[in-house]
Length: 337
Ligand code: NAD
Ligand code: UDP
Ligand code: UDP
Image (cartoon, rainbow, N blue to C red; front, top):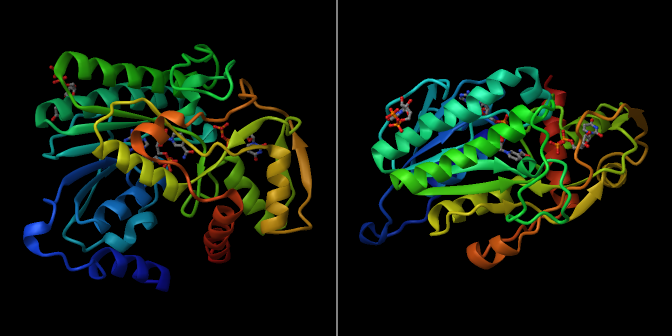
């Protein structure tokens, strides 16, 4: 076990504060689908850290066993290799449903599988929630807004997604997943929570994930040109992963169904992002322009008023700070390649 991993393990298992037994909250049994992926593995760390028992279901389509190796041997952690498209029986109190590839490169690679995962996979997890009485949280996405015509995007905007485009498997898949969640809520009384997550980055992202932040950080560290798709004037708002995890847990444990935008309102063009990469990683980084991808949203920025008011949540980590932490993790992993 590397020093990083052993420190994770000790913070998760040993260094918990001593709380008298009578004052402890009952330990929850929590299912995290997609718990070996980027966001899921950080969520699992936090849940284990607070004393929950966690079951992870993952088919390793994009997830990595290395993301959770520090929990192996912990009796409160269980990993099941399983595809959510198939039914499963487990007994739990809460379900965080994350299973789904998140990067356009991955979700476009097998679009029909992406739809199956979003629709049949979500149906199965809602069926599980209905049978067990578990609370169910869906990690939806800013992509339900499509190439948004409103700016910044509020939760009551219905979106501008292209049903027949190459992003449809993800955008429309997540829109159906939201509809399924609301229909199980209305017709079967399942307690649901819906998060619409905006672009998130941090340690443990796959180096070959294909998203702009992971590409730029890896390219800068390898001294390769940063690839800009299109003219670089499209915008995104980048959220550090610890902020997202805090928001997801507040949403799950609170009383509001949502949907809630969870994202950092700081907005950057891809050209701005190049400058931040130069400041934080390599001032001599160069750029190469590549063709724009189909149906690429032009402007994306969350309005997070609702989450601020009802969840008392807002992101704390600025992009420069988060990128430096991520770069340390990528540097270590690239050196070990
Ligand atoms: P990721 O690709 O790192 O993780 C997804 C995980 O789900 C992987 O471990 C993968 O193996 C697993 N998975 C995929 N299909 C599965 C299936 N059919 N059965 C079981 N497991 C399956 O992605 P991430 O960034 O961690 O995203 C997690 C969730 O958050 C996704 O639902 C994604 O749509 C949502 N989200 C993420 C972002 C972001 O910027 N990271 C933005 C919006 C929404
Ligand atoms: N399901 C599951 N685990 C469970 C309960 C249900 O995987 O513990 C699946 C089930 O196989 C079904 C889906 O969830 O395909 C929807 O279940 P629901 O009970 O809503 O529908 P029904 O089985 O009545 O069609
Ligand atoms: N992008 C880019 N260079 C890359 C990867 C992506 O310029 O190496 C662009 C992409 O075309 C999009 C933006 O960066 O306009 C964000 O892409 P990403 O895949 O990270 O996430 P998206 O928000 O599109 O899901």
